Length: 128
Image 1 (tube, rainbow, N blue to C red):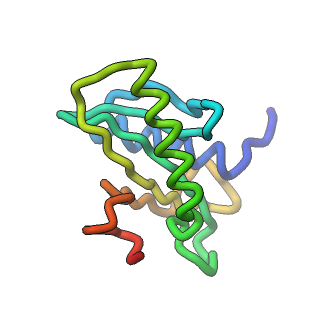
Image 2 (image 1 turned 120 degrees about the horizontal axis):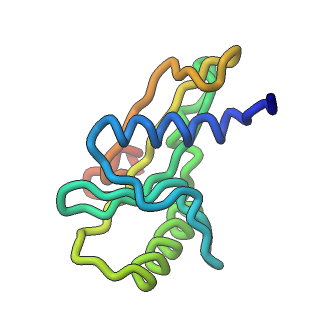
């Protein structure tokens, strides 16, 4: 059996987490010439573009800190490309899911934190 990377395991765990919360998954690892979106899902009136960040429980930084301004801009451009290909009346939203992995068993999360509307600077979960 092939070993799965912690990043891939984190994305699978995040997708399961969203499904359990009632989201409908539309795409995973969506790629455009501008960048990649880990998960695209919908719930209620939102079309949600999700960046998943996975870290061990003893990491020096919060996983969300790896979502830099440059990374956010690439995700937004990729999302615009997705919407151009798949028109919708849903409101776009950008979330971050932090997965804290178990180093001995990457498919078991020690914790998952879902930061909704994470790119909104007015109510930013990032503090920048």
